[in-house]
View 1 (cartoon, rainbow, N blue to C red):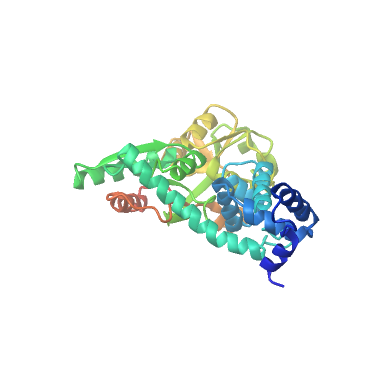
View 2: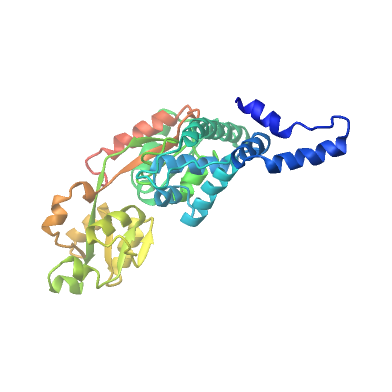
Length: 351
């Protein structure tokens, strides 16, 4: 029987002339419906969506992991799970097959995902266009960067842009990836430079990859660890200071997925200062300042075990230029990105 006929059979009032009776019978009939019909009927009349929940669902389907998806939207896992449950409550059905590997969407979840991708994309475009009017960003190119790129390739790229386009106006925001991703979502910046770890596979983002950079473990030249054998077990006897981008790489190397460093920060230069003034072991990108410290006998790289040397993929940090798909480009965006890539590939650039 067609759904419309089934619903009509269950809710049609007996007395069309008595409004009060009709209302009472109507409520009774809804309560007496089979659970599935009751859910469908109420969903037809009350279904609405929170944009925030849709964003979270898109992130979950991109990462196929509650942990990674929660991290990508800067939420705790319990809060993220509640958001997905709230969305399922709104639509009246499960959207994710939690018992299956890879968390595939249900049939209803796939339908919702198709619409959610479009809604989120249009929302991002709307935020960007409104921001363009409010902040006059049609004349100002606003972008973000982590501290290392902001101190290396960004100044050179901006100088080159101003040399070719003297009337160009730019605004740089320096911060960590979570802050910059929020600013990007609000339309406050056009793109940002960051580790791509948390954005790979997310269909909302467009990533222009930069050259992969090596990372290293190092310590002050008089560190006690150099008196013995530099092995993983000895490393864990001392405080470890690392940058955000290498935290997971370090955990993989140490075979300690739950390892929490003594210091985690976005700025590799701050990590180096801590190492120079303490017995902490540093872990970050191989910055020019670190290489200078090694050449001047202030720092030493730790001896790398053979298993570490063989894991070439795990020895690199993958950075990129991250923007939202579907947003209109600033007239000077492509020029600036081109200069960033040019200086990133220069021989003296940080790797």
